[in-house]
Length: 179
Image (cartoon, rainbow, N blue to C red; front, side):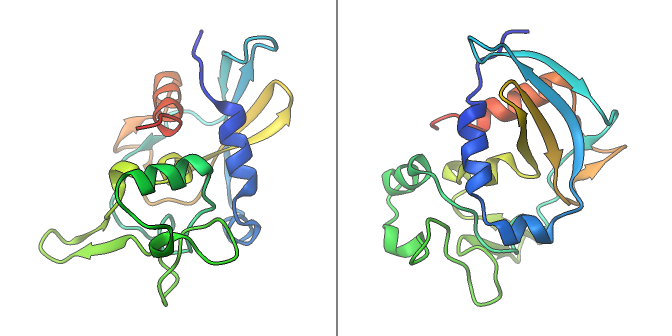
């Protein structure tokens, strides 16, 4: 398998993510091990530890958007500014994270009364950690990453897209795209 993904970049952002948030979500499950080729940093192998899981976002925002905003990368900030947002609108003072509302939810989370679900008002330009959710990578060694899953109502054994090799590659590729 040859897929060029920015796993080192994803890892850096994931590690910068708020420690307290990860501590609250400590029930993470190990989904798959991702092995990289040492020289090219391309995916060499994906070995699944949990099989037949599926994912479909339920638009509930229970865990992903209501526990405070994620840390932001420089690319995240640039993407939001390019979309017309001013740093003062979204950047939390004193740390590189999205501002939160009084209830702790993300400043960009809205509830659509008409449709009956939560929406991200910046969905198309949302930060990398939001694009990755409910997945994150843990570096086990220089060439081995553990794909873990955080609590999410969209994970199921019956409904949604199968979390397989193609799903992981597509999901990680999308998360690291500059779009």
